[in-house]
Every structure is written in structure tokens, then in C-alpha cells.
Amino acid sequence: MKYFPPQSTDRVRLRRGSGAFTLIEVLAALLLMAIIVPVALEGMSVVSRAAVLGQHKAAAMRVAERVLSEQLAVISQGQPIPTSGSGTETDGDTSYPWTMQTEAWPQDAMTQMTVRITFSVQGNAYEMTLSTLFDPNAGAPVTTTGTGRAAS
Image (cartoon, helix red, strand yellow):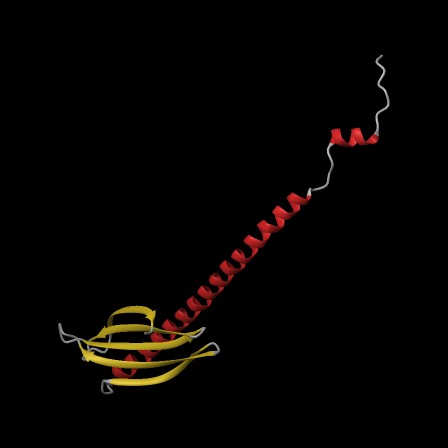
């Protein structure tokens, strides 16, 4: 058997390593958090704004589809084709002002009906447009297209 002389507790602690962080490690961690946390919060803010804008755009398109359907239903009942119109429709808790315009399509005997919806999100104005072609003699829509853009 070997004999080991008693060792001081300081030497034993040094060999095993201490469980505490040094001041440099704590400062480095705080600096890293000070950089990462604001960037992450800004990223979450951007995602939130994009989600709100997307919800408003989807609601604006629902309103435009509803307005087009109502206008085409009136035309199919034999009423005269309106050349323009405007109003306000509500989707959820938001009101969307709309304007409608009809014009002759350059090819064929078709008529184009366009509905423009305007709305504002966080101080920025946006406009969504939905158009359809229909035969004024048949009263049935042929094709629809939609666009969205920021209003200038």
C-alpha cells in the first residue's frame, strides 16, 4: 500500500476545478445577450407586422370578391350595367372602402369589372384590385384576376 500525505483543501479544489464562472465569462455572456435579444425582438416585430398586413390583404380580397359577386348578380337579373360605384364593406371589425368601375374589353364583346379596395395598416396605405371579365349578354363571369400593391 502506498501512503499519500494529507493535502490541503485548496489543492484538491484546484485539481477538481471550481464550479463558478469567471468575471470575464459572465461579462461575455451579458454582452452576447445584449446583442441577441434586441435583434430577436425586432425580428418578432417584423413577423408580427407582416402577419397583420397579410390578414388585411386577405380580408380586402374577400370584400372585393363579395362586391364583384353582388354586382354580377344584379347584372344577371337584367339590370343595366353600372359604369362605376363605391361603398364600404366590413370584414371582421375593419371597414374597407371600395370603388368599382366597368369598361368595355378591347377584344370580343366582353366587359371588364374592376373593384379596388383601399386600406391602411400601421400608417401605410395599400390597395388591392380584383377584376373579372363577363359577357353582358350572358351575365356570367369568365375569368378573375387579383393584384395587390402599396398605394402611392
